[in-house]
Image (cartoon, rainbow, N blue to C red; front, side, top):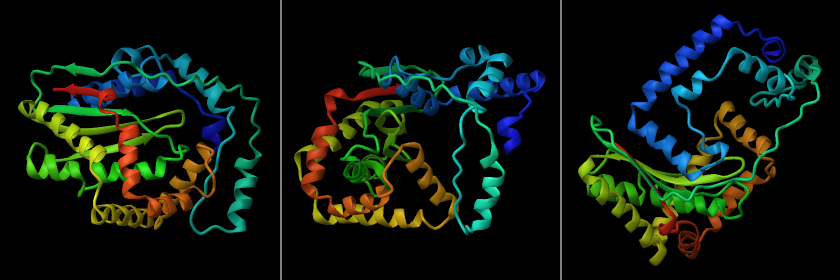
Length: 303
């Protein structure tokens, strides 16, 4: 691992081979409407921001061997590694890490200035793909980062609407209407920002009605109070899922990694559980009106 961090060799021939492989994978991905819809959604919701950059063949072909070598030397080699260990840990493991990775000499690293987040004004983006079998829909808005005080309760709102198999969107659009094999919503939290998005694939003739039904379900949450039983079901699902995610060392290390990289409190996951338990029907109603503003939604369709 230390060799990889400090003494890697990037052979020009190997670089060209790997770049060509990446280009072919990228071209193949762009043939999928779901991949294209994801890329365009990020591009338009984070317009003029690094978060909105898309990956395509033209951009990849601009990368040279010298670019990669410079990046490795200026950024990879000059950043102190964060080491996360999880599982059965003793002083022996700590000693080994200190004797190896702990002895790496890191030069001074001048971090690039992080820009303030910029979001785009676009509200619609449609791309026609005549040979596509379905239309991929991405419908969403700027979301909540993990340090937002409403993040945990918004997680309850998102789960109720589209975050698990028994959600309202699944029951309406998959089970009742039969428009799709699956539909979900998620709040994607990044370091400088976040986005909330509903994603699904439907036949072209069902596209407009699917958007209408998504809007209808959001409108219902904004205007009607959820039942005690439905809210308790979602809470039980979230708390049960959280406990299930603490059974393996890799899953625990992933949670610790989030705390480290986003400078979150060590009480973050304790707060998560308590906020889930404390979330009320009135909270759901208030958050739906505050954050899921229908006139601000970005509507992306590819197919």
